[in-house]
Amino acid sequence: MMASRFTLRQLEYFVTVGERGSIAQASAQVNVSSPSISAAISQLEDEFGLPLFVRKHAHGLSLTQAGRQFLVQARKVLAEADSLNRLAGSIVGNVQGPLNIGCLLTFAQVLLPAIRREFQAKHVDVQVSQIECDQQTLIEKLRRAEIDVAVSYDLEVPPDLEFIPLRSLPLYAVVAADHPLAKAKSVTVKKLVDYPMVLLDLPISRAYFLNAFENAGVSPNIVERTRDMAVMRSLVANGFGFSVANIRPYSDLSPDGRELSFIPLEGELRPLRLGFIVPDGARSILSVDAFIDHASQTISAWNYPGQPLTDGS
Image 1 (tube, rainbow, N blue to C red):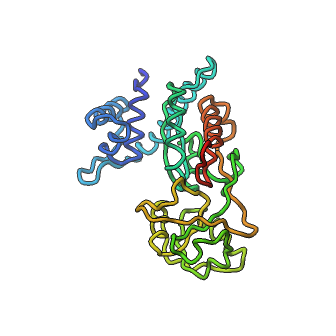
Image 2: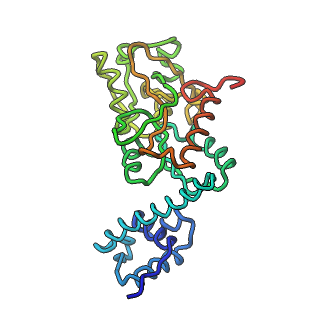
Image 3: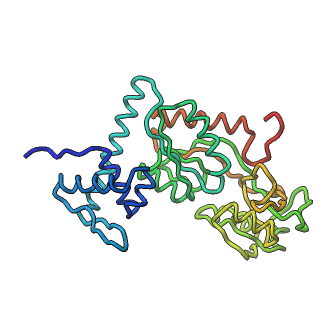
């Protein structure tokens, strides 16, 4: 029996369609035409003699039972191929190959694009992709080897993953410019509970924010919840309530142009540590190690996040 012939590119298209459930969405993700992706999947099905998808005209594609098993193995093959590319780069001392970066939603917009820009200009042979999500999803993706490194906080990092600390970020109260506390030099959580709260409601992060109140023996009056940092700032700036956060943006303006005030929180509050979460041994991969070094130097030079950019920093 002759060995089946297929390409890694075909497997990549198959995995993308399997994860997205749509050839059109897969086409947008990998920037390849839909007919090319359809042809690649048909070739795989013909080569292996397996129906991998059920075609549903109104609902896209769904994996068959064989397709689900095939997807698991295809991911492993692609991961091994990435490992071979990285091994070759390590042997010759080149930083090259794919690098998949995850970043916590709350600060991805103020950190990752600028870090990536300079990193990719320096290491042109590294193919970088990024994803922004909550802490729980970052951990899941690291465990499934869908991302190589995550830029995040030291929140409930499991023992099978390594946290590499970068800097501490204290808690701030965020209020509108006309809020009664806006001119305060600092504030306690006991004082904040006199006012309504807008909660940044992300898995794991929410527990950290609320724990600051629980430890003080008080409960905030949560009137609004959002998973989006920008929406939180706009709700606060428009008077819906205060919020708490560890990230202070460059500008003390909300996305709709209204002024905000960031007030340091008093008391024995655990600051979050910003850093990198990686699987065990990940720093032996040149691209991961180079990214961590570059990001560490860049953030230190910015004197950011956590306080506004100062002249000369």
